[in-house]
Image (cartoon, rainbow, N blue to C red; front, top):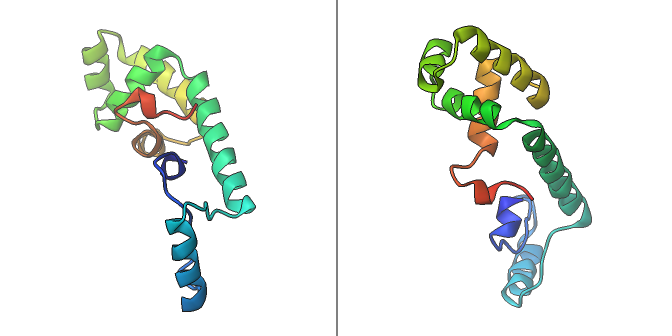
Length: 124
């Protein structure tokens, strides 16, 4: 959805024939949006899924997720936030459930993929 929000005009498969590609470029140049309904539906569904997950995360869990994204281990996260390792583990367990991931690597990947350094870019 970031690409749509940034002004991208459409999406075409690399298997499109040359005639269709040229026609699509011309249409895009004239301001036409070239996403088909299925693409827009998938993008809207993705936005809603990410937003739902972000809305479930507490501010402390977001802090922990950001530190996890930076590659910090539980001890380093605990020291940085001045909490116990046990508390970090509690928050991680909660995060894994909310993000529907199995481990810290998947959570860090999710955070890298979906958490921007600019909260203004989060799905609305």
